[in-house]
Image (cartoon, rainbow, N blue to C red; front, side, top):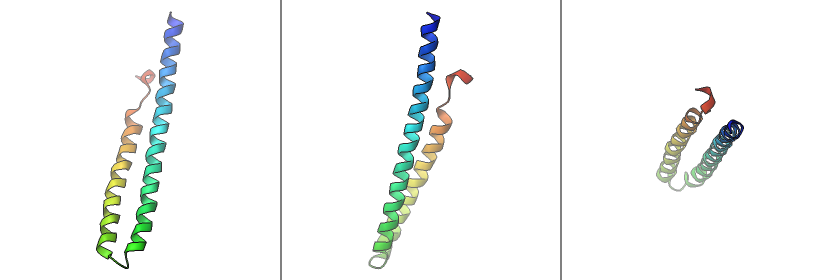
Length: 84
């Protein structure tokens, strides 16, 4: 019985690590795509409508800062239960 319990705890820890890596990877991909698209849009719109280019760049900057904060919170809050 104890052997099965130990395996399930180890399995849960491994699953949490995989979930943590996957969530962080997805967030970093989203951040990268947003920065690339905002940069392209900024340089395409800056000659025609500078106020719209600035608005898009500012909005993207705010969202990227929020996503970076989420990455740090995910890294902090996904801890191994064995260390307690």
